[in-house]
Length: 120
Image (cartoon, rainbow, N blue to C red; front, side, top):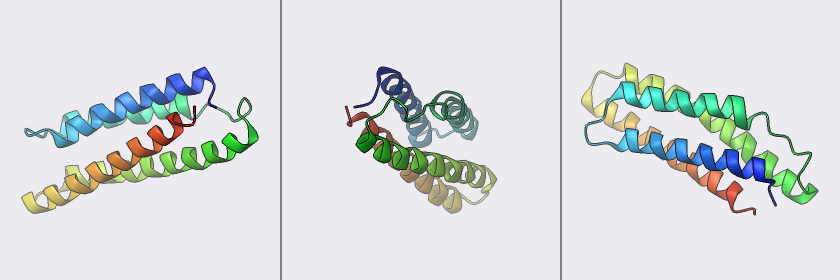
């Protein structure tokens, strides 16, 4: 079971990721909004989530938590690259492909966070 501070921070991360997902799938897609929302997610993860430790966790939960935490961190780094590539794309088809890849990655991140929240 995750401690309340973990739950609170992962719930906030989930909210930020859902906002990012809305920006990425908006019909009037705007790259600057996407970049701002991504930066919010990244800063929150760096400042609030990365500081969490496994000290308060049960040993069996700690291993799963560490694994998911690592996957979230890795996916966020890849998402950063996806955002940069999307902003650099000039062709409409390339933009659509990169936007789809970005949306898939955000969906994957949401899945990881939900998996952590379900450990309660």
